[in-house]
Image 1 (cartoon, rainbow, N blue to C red):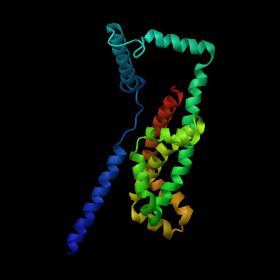
Image 2: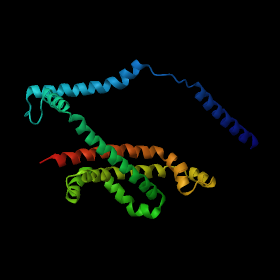
Image 3: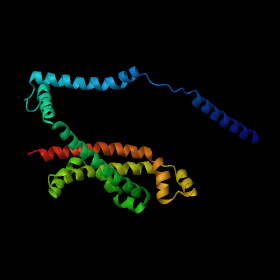
Image 4: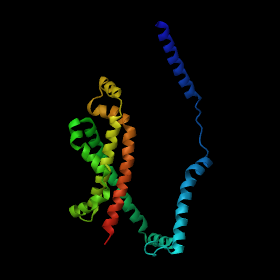
Amino acid sequence: MASTETKATTDDLAGLEAGLDALDAVQTHRTPVREVLVKKVLPPILAVGLVLVVWQVLVSLKVTDETKLPALSAVWDSLSDMWLKGTLLEVIWTSVSRGLLGFLLALAIGTPLGLLVARVKFVRAAIGPILQGLQSLPSVAWVPPAVLWFGLNDAMMFTVILLGAVPSIANGLVSGIDQVPPLFLRAGRTLGATGLRGAWHVVMPAALPGYIAGLKQGWAFSWRSLMAAEIIASSP
């Protein structure tokens, strides 16, 4: 029996030593600029170029009316005209500022909401399914009610952004917290990390992968919601 335990201990030490040797053998080197350009920069440029070529071919073949598919030259002339008038950057910044501010508001609301849902069983049972349903609901569905409630203004757009991004951020954080090993939580409580301190020093760092995934989805949803709201708000 003792020989079996000794052999198991020896195997564990050998496995640990092999793992450490493998880590030491990993060589970090800086990726050449040429390789980065070829693998990271060139493919998106080629993809955009292909889309523009197909666009121009469709315009040349006159597959549809120019009002539905304008020529590249017409789009460029419109952008140049807006640049000369000084309105291009203003229009771009209007959308960007709305998206950034809406996402920050969603972050400020979704993060504590996700912590509350993940840590309080009654709250999870009460509003957890609602958050799941809101996340699966298309953001554009909130535009007509938001127009009726607030009118065609920034409040309407921020409301649509929040309804689209907050559930994603909260659900991402809940998913990340659910995957935290219970040992981490027990160790944190043993060291005195309870309440807000435990959430800040133990729960949030351990749940970071799921939280970041929720932030990415919330960022995408906030832009999708904003685009839908602006298109509908600017239509006759």
